[in-house]
Amino acid sequence: MLIYLISLLFITLGALTHRYIARMRPNVMLGFRLPMSFVSKGVWKEANRVAGKAFMVTGAVFLILGGIFDEPLCMLLLGITVFVIVVVIALYVRLKLEVITGMEEGQGPPIRRVATLRMNMWLLLPPLLMVLASLLYLATNISALPSSVAIHFDLTGMPDAYMSREHFLIMIPSLIMILPLSSFITLLCSIGIPLSRFRSEQLLMTRIMLVTHWAISAILSLALIGTIHFNIHGVHLPHFFTSLFLLIIIYLIIITILFMNYAFRREKRTRQKAPRARTSSS
Image 1 (cartoon, rainbow, N blue to C red):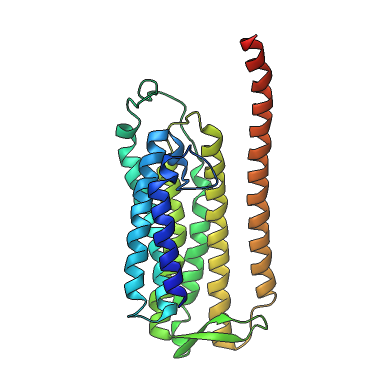
Image 2: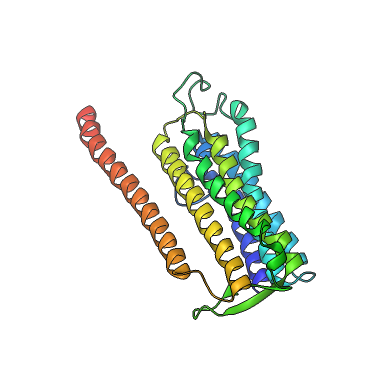
């Protein structure tokens, strides 16, 4: 039932993104908000139109798959599909960037030799090493896993969902790898993009993506190691759920701080521009 509701939500949000959000001013609250989406209004429009179509198709496909496969499998496939879509659109926009940022209606000349987004590669690699370490832990303990693997736990820490070992070894490593790799590739695509008049929005979304890259990698790596440990030994790692909870809370706090800092700076710029506007009009 849940997969059908999510599929319908994807179709609805995809239609709204394609029809309305693509026409909006680039913003950090609604739409396909990768750093390259803020290069210009034309890029924003193109990225959101493509994203809208992709999510409508995804929703329609999973309405069909929901009647064929089990819901847990569909949810995993849907999660993987969403991240693949994000990467594909990021690559598409990156390849089309020079064409899209040419002479636009009501805009200045094509973007040439402007400041570009820079990023330290060393900030991107450690999360991938965390994921690799968790996958190596899985590889060394495959033979010790039971035929039915517990993959989800209730509030008391007891397992309430299971998956066959064969499905677990196919689906879970795929999910663990594709999420951090997706954020890694998307961040790579953002390096070198022109910093436009939406520079503040570009920098905000880049920082959010970088923090998310670290958070996803840390949370998934710990979750995989903890799940394997429970299925082999029958007990959870010490402070396992507390550690996961703290990681999520820290991530949410950092994201909140980034948004608040962006809002504060934007308000400050608005106040600084107001006296200038009154002076020029007088």
